[in-house]
Image (cartoon, rainbow, N blue to C red; front, side, top):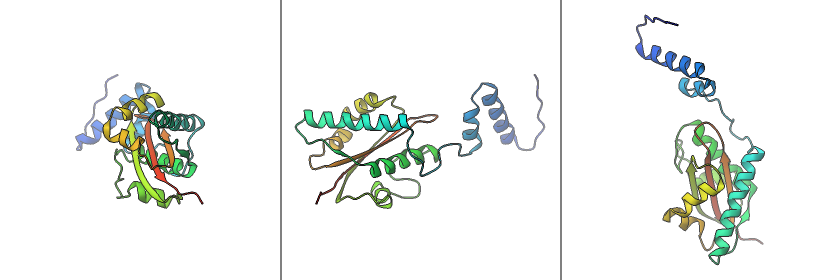
Length: 181
């Protein structure tokens, strides 16, 4: 098939060709990304069962590491896990990879907005593209900065969010201290 374009805006031609090529190659899900559409999970959506399972397994690996190093295991916090997941989705939707989002919200801001009951914020680990809990933990354990967060001696709680999607998965761990009454 031969297509001839006559257009005053060559950039639009390239964009249209890219969309046609992706669609023809069976990559229709990526067309939204090329056209700048948000074709993903809306904010506030819960993790899928598989994403939640990966998040809980990741927290289990964190606790195994902590116990091996003589530290107390962390308590799972579902509200913090939801906030972590929202950040993972946000990184995918707005195509950024950082602890502070493009709106300037820090991890502490996001946890406060989600109404996570905490006394002290201990840190956040993020990762992108690691396939599965073992792979992401391997990466974090082999990074001195991330390992320091994983092994924070006074930490008490953890929330993990995992978002699978084109170009992912995105991983977010929230660590904090919550003094129990």
